[in-house]
Image (cartoon, rainbow, N blue to C red; front, side, top):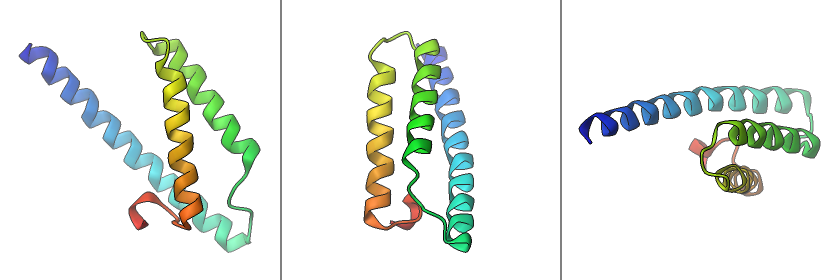
Length: 92
């Protein structure tokens, strides 16, 4: 069991690192959009990202419902950040 826990911890560390890296790009996108007075919410882009992530998750998931739940949660989280007026989650 200890070996499996160690591997879960390793994967969790990688997930946190990747999510932190992703947020740096999200922050950069907000800066660019603000500088260009571009629309912050681009529904077709949001849908494309969610669809792409769900498709990738479906390829990898051993649990069939996981991709659907991920899309709903990630979409809701992004919407709550946008609706609150926060540029990023760390600034809320």
